[in-house]
Image (cartoon, rainbow, N blue to C red; front, side):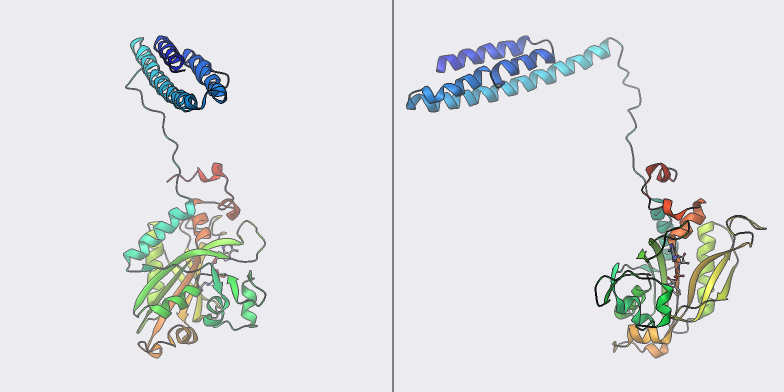
Length: 347
Ligand code: FA5
């Protein structure tokens, strides 16, 4: 058996050495290592051998297999290298040609604008906070001055997560206002970007899953002037020009007084499609934090006297801002997952 294995080894290595192409190597592999090859034949004979010889034959066959696989791999690499060298020498290879460009992914337009917003607010000293998307009813509604069964709950049709309605998919980023008050020490300024959910029919301007950015500033002596200055400054930075803003009365249970803030259309002077001819674009809900909300957020804390504090808060839709920025006319494109759409906003 030993002689037989040795003669196979010599034979196989000779054929590997003589191979002039990958095809020849495949043939050697088949003849020696294939299902019906020489090594398989030897392994098949083992049961017929004397017990003393079995072990030697098995080990020898396995060793031959390893030797051959290594020799074939080395010969293949050498042949491939020789082929490249031959192409190069024949003039078919130009080392100065640019390599094929690797396909790169990009940032989603929502991520692009979110990062711009974050960068403007952090430059104004704001911290960025996060909060849970599956939220307690307490944080999403009750602590925000929206008691159970209060009519203002009708403003946001909600996905409840359990039978007794203690858990909801958050309908707004405002619950993080309370979470911030529970653990941060005033004065502080935060923004909260995040995903929110509402049980809404989809259309060109409404999604069931969309994004908001909340802002909250708490301290002593905070008033409406701070709110309008901040949002005006932010919008000027975002659109790269001086823009007027205006406040209209608006109702949100967690602010008092509450406003809707509009911004002069960044795209026209006299009226266009974006502002529906009015030269004003609705931008966000905002107002001064309701005393009940300050009490809910800070009430348990011994280190904070919430009666001395005031604050302002605002919340705007990021998806609508992205639409405004890039001139997108249907919100459903944003989360539709169509790469042909997304590739139009490289970054
Ligand atoms: C709120 O959600 C308040 N939490 C905002 C707020 C925060 C007010 C702090 C006062 C103080 P509203 O429901 O209007 O408010 O939603 C805010 C923004 O989310 C809207 O202006 C809009 O841009 C966006 N939005 C609301 N519903 C949808 C929807 N279905 N699809 C896409 N964007 C939406």
